[in-house]
Image 1 (cartoon, rainbow, N blue to C red):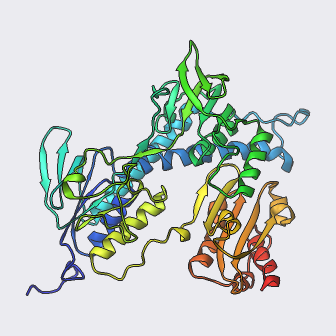
Image 2 (image 1 turned 180 degrees about the horizontal axis):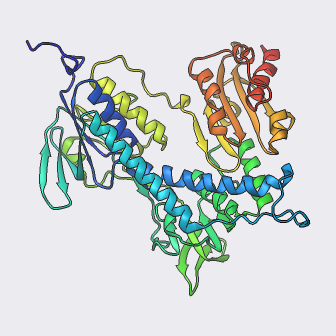
Image 3 (image 1 turned 90 degrees about the vertical axis):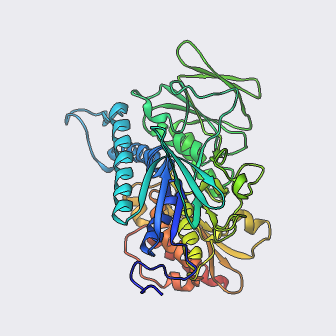
Amino acid sequence: MAPVTSETPKSLFAPARVAILGGGPGGYEAALVAAHAGAEVTIVEEKGVGGSAVLTDVVPSKTLIATADAMRRVNASTAFGVRFGQDDDDSHTTDAWADFSTVNERLLELAHTQSEDIRESLEAAGVTVIDGRGRLKPPHSIEATRADGSVELIKADAVIVATGAHPRELPTAVPDGERILNWTQAYSLTEPPEHMIVVGSGVTGAEFASAYCRLGTEVTLVSSRERVLPGEDPDAARVLENSFARVGVNVASKTRAEKVERTADGVAVTLSDGRVIEGSHCLMAVGGVPNTADVGLEECGVQTTDSGHIMVDTVSRTTATNIYAAGDCTGQMPLASVAAMQGRVAVSHMQGDAVKPLKLHQVASNVFTSPEIATVGVSQAQVDSGAYQADVVKLDLSTNPRAKMTNIHDGFVKIFARKGSGTTIGAVVVAPRASELIFPLALAVTQKIHVDDVASTFTVYPSLTGSLSEAARRLHVHQ
């Protein structure tokens, strides 16, 4: 028997060779864990390490949103007594404007840098990265075709498929990259759009609508539902709708975009109710399609759903032996954090480690609008339907001293505690940087912490986190 070294896989049954199809969060996180466990790891990625999450989706879009938030804070600074211009200028207006060439150059550079950082981390860990298109080969190997046409077969003991997804296109609104855009093409603009029509009121559509409005663009949001963000907390959606109304986002609700056409100097969007909205640009945000076609899934016995998503269980196994899957191609929550966790869980399972199955109700998610909307655990809809019995406290931020100091008008904290036990089972935070504020409540949900323990934990005064403990404190009376 070979001597056990630091490079020896932890289990005798652990795969010594792991091949990963796709270099996004699900792929590169799995690669790092597998390499650390001593496996020989190869990633095949066609478009660049980091995948769409880093190169065309999460990193660039959130960088654009960060720029929009900087504009928001500058434009709101006069309320703090900050003045621009001469002392005798009574207008107190700002001269802030968005240089789209610089904005997009910066965000694309950040995406490229992040991709290179990930590649360096992978190579430092001993992972082989192959730039090329991959295809599964039975029983569990990957055939990689490089840009120069050369082909290499990567033989493996286990495979992880992490091919991600791409924007869904409507046949009557095909993006051209100039006036009709999908979310990967929005960063080619050199000037702020005069009037951006955003089709789709889900997370992606709401985020872009919020960002473009803050950057000084007229925005119309086309929503097929009665309200924006139909899948989010209704109280949170109302706050966002009120914010949209205040900053001038026009919402065309309960209607669909039947077709989008180029005009002489812009676009015309024909709605299902007969209206035609004209603008300078149109951004299509109508969901994603998994990248599962023609990658060899069927030949390897990997089953997919009617939507093309790979069927996986809670430890990322597919229907084929020693083939796992992670990320947007699986149809789970389309979040980079979920993809990364699925990848890590897959490696832990194949290595024979103790595995905590993926529990989607413990996932903290965030909508990067202004204000942000962060959620975790049980939702208001689940409580209203009777699926969960919970006591609920919703505390507006209007009384929070730090909110007053920083001129925050919109937002709240909502906590759900299980009836009878007082365990924290869900939360919603609507506020600037809600993505940062949700973590202690996500910890409480994951670790089944009693609301009294949340309430009795010291918070800084003054701080927005004070409202987290105050909301938990108000739930004590129900126990």
